[in-house]
Image: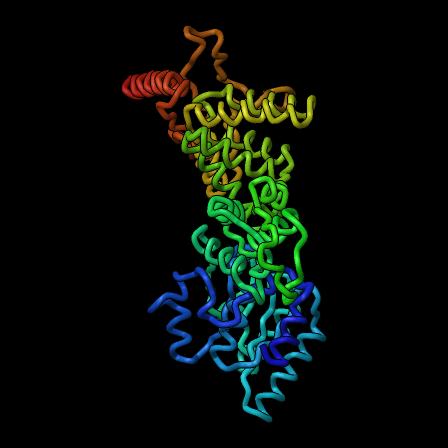
Length: 459
């Protein structure tokens, strides 16, 4: 090891394992073959030596920062990193000014890497836009949030969005093996035994996050026994080896931090999956997505509100009891709280998932609303008005109104819509659940009305 290598080794002391093991060359980068494989987007970009502005969008621990750094190196450009959490317009302008000076004086290109670019406000993004347009900097932004919602349209149109995926367990296993055996940057000098099943467990429980996998490995190594600093002398031959077992890994992982940001894109993804599973009558999937929300700390009342809406929108008249169940679960949760409150929530979830489905509450209102918007405030037919005053009676209000309860079957042929909408059929019952019987009754009443009107016309 030369002088510079020794200095680099000393500099790595105290750094987290994930930082020490950060790939130093693109050949070390693991995963994301859908963008880095032969013929894929970034591989074509690198082969052409033309690096465009990019937005790297993906979950935590998938290599966004590392990839940005390696892409800059492959393109022969300076790499300048800013954190959108820490940097303001002042730091942004300073970085751009330095990039302009380097370009003019030395012909050097600059990659400006903005971590968590979704946290830049509109003014900060606007301040960056002209320098990206002019080519003063090549922007690489990293975000865990959907850039369509978080990045200005003008800036987004000047960058290619590259989607990174959660790493596969096989990819994480490569990183874990590398960290265990690497004597310089990893844990290779420590007397550790890490069986294959424990390595697989780490790869599986990290849930696609390389940083989480390596942090758990480092913590488990510490739990298993006294560890040495990277770069220190290896232990004497024959020294007792310490095994990392399942208990050490479980303690290192603690309770899994679920990928679920209440204000972010993953939040809406999980909620959407929950509602679609209910609508698709899959109780197993519905309970899974509901558990994902609750175990990640979602407010149970948020979940219950969604189920109350669902009961009316997607179950509706096919089983009106669904709305009763959803409201009862809400009241029960407010009464007992957690953790027992999860039981009525789950009961409501199962009821809604297995209930017959009808969205006629939604479609019927939408059809009526369309006529309200198209026709405006049509006059109320005079016979339907309440003649509560002498003036009303003199205007003919209420005249000719027939009281249904005075007629056989408690039904009478009457016109209840404005004349311009006579014959409109907003409600189209389905044949689902209870609504099948409702459909039969509605059809019979409509047919009786049609026959009576036809008879009146012919007469």
